[in-house]
Image (cartoon, rainbow, N blue to C red; front, side, top):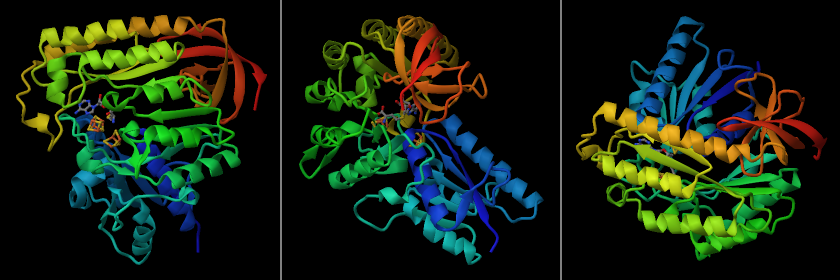
Length: 440
Ligand code: SAH
Ligand code: SF4
Ligand code: F3S
């Protein structure tokens, strides 16, 4: 039998990145090997995101491009789709103009092996949308990881929060918690094989609760496993962040980093969003972080243009941005998503107003970012190499313990290497440095 190859294109959040590694594991067990590019692969799998309308359009147009391309060629290549757009659009994606050969639901990644068998038997237009098991788990052995030092470990999947703008609960289903023993076993086997950077994943990671094992209990168990140098978790929901978690983060192996999405600084909008906290409560949690973890980086997500957002609401958001002094802000323009509660609200903020507000937020965060990164210049930091720089092709780049990107244009390093770096310059979101010592 000739060797068959695969390629996975991944979009969206870290959960999708992990799902791609789970899919790769099954492809490799079925005898596929990784191709050099999507164009040269026998099987192309698109792992998609639907969080904003633009992401969905990107996924479907890419799918059309790939399937059209196949029709023009020998017809040998198979194109499949997984992730949140797959779960959202289901059988539509097997029909014209999309013509995917298979659709794998966001809760059915473990069924890829079965799909591959059916493809081999000549079946096409396959739908595998749900797993037929009641609880959820996965085995460490079924993940094919590209990085040999940094790993994502899921502790839950899905989300039951139903923030009114968000499609995730509809395309990922309700939250399901993974057995703590499974999580601990996976982390232990990862550290045994040389992983030093562990990131625990969940859409609302700190809502973890398995039969009385709380998030803090789980963190305690994971942190006690030897060999971890950086332990992170994303994404933390402000309503569920408790002081015990913050206190625990003071000690190693916790990395000085937290992602705490604000979304809006207006109590009225937060209520309409169903976020479950007020601006006062959010700021109280920020003050815990500043008190217990003074050097830690706080990253946040902010949305502009939620239906009904007034100038006063937006000013409230800017005020929190000024007060909280975030180290990193990801800002988004509100996008109407099907089935969500906010989709039925009148979206009465004119586009020009949203654009102008977005620009004001960007200008403020630009200054914040510059101020926060400048203080690293001249310092020596530990950098874990995780790839090559986007701008400076070929130059290695990595992350500080605060998760800030450092580009190293004058050095040669391998992915997974841990190096000591002197910081020579600071940009808006990235640092520039020079390696002074190889650590690991
Ligand atoms: N689970 C995470 C976020 C997942 S989505 C949390 O609770 O924060 C990542 C970010 O996308 C969100 O923080 C939000 O800012 C943004 N987002 C989600 N839905 C959106 C929408 N309909 N329009 C614009 N941005 C959205
Ligand atoms: Fe979406 Fe809210 Fe769940 Fe985050 S917590 S995934 S924003 S519903
Ligand atoms: Fe996107 Fe799905 Fe993640 S919608 S952000 S890939 S959970």
